[in-house]
Length: 167
Image 1: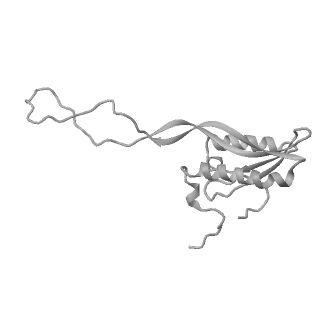
Image 2: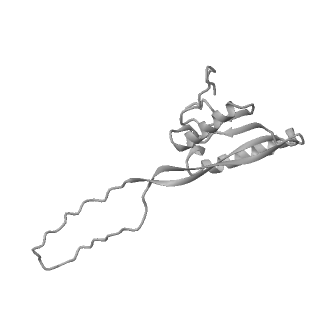
Image 3: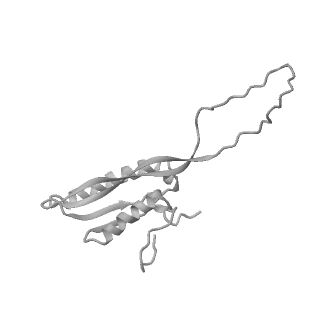
């Protein structure tokens, strides 16, 4: 099958891998940009931290254990009917840290540009998208430039107004 966007491997979007991919990409971008903007500007890696609840499988220690006795004396007490265990999804709070870059004027510390590499949590409904959209609106309503890099295939893209969508 032809890959319409060869820049990103969908394997890298997996929840277990993405944080490492994202962190390394942010550091690589900071390393690449710094020599081009120094000494007038400085590039810093910043963090956005929020708590979310993603459904994760419940893993723990059983509160009750049942055992079957062989040749137990018959009792007149009613017995419980055993059923197969059911797997359930329990929302557990998770602290999420997302990194992004800021470019500031060295002389005044004025924020000039924010560079964001979108994460899956930014592109799906929930706390991550809400936190990012709030920050995005604040930046777009200021004199600060926003560079948004979306390498992900999954999730809902950020609104771009009347601009056409292109890979």
